[in-house]
Length: 238
Ligand SMILES: [Zn+2]
Image (tube, rainbow, N blue to C red; front, side, top):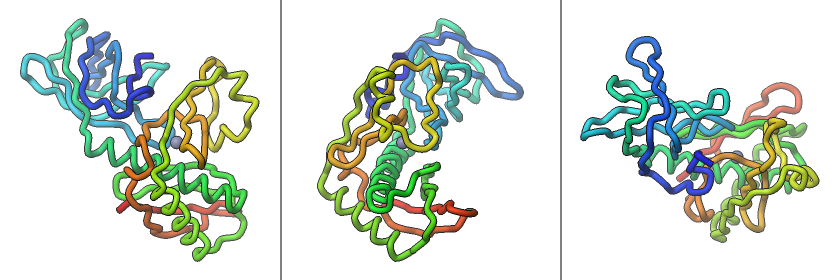
């Protein structure tokens, strides 16, 4: 596995070798590394930013995406070339906030699902606030505020979060592992499972904190109607 964040979401500095550098338009350079801890934009979790360092010169990493199965880093400065070894540093404040947001979204979705049976149809994490979309007919703000309170009670229990892997055939036997847009590419034969122990367990590729206490506290911001049966809930962390 050359996506280092899958097994160690706390890795913020690492050494890697440049597999390829492609020049884009303007001052854009697309870099593929032999391994990376930079998280690419995916699954509702925004990409990391940071820098690569070679011979004391810093190259800003401004975007990270996944294309044809490869993680590509957009660097905004010329000078890197194939075969170079670089030191990479992730902008940790940004990443860590997104990790807290991601685990918080799982906690809140898990509680709402448990309490109402509503299905989660999407989510988008952000630095200021995050949102989850629910397939829910009845919309009751007071109830949603209640679910946030229950979520915070769970968070305060300091539940551990564990990452493990399952064989595809085995994972598919448990429907509850597959929520929302976890559309499985047919080629994937190992499924990564994120388990907030004692609360909710699901197939997921994102980065999470290792215990719920690190989330802090979820604050309900607002809820919106987005068409029939679709409710959008916004929250932030404090
Ligand atoms: Zn997730």
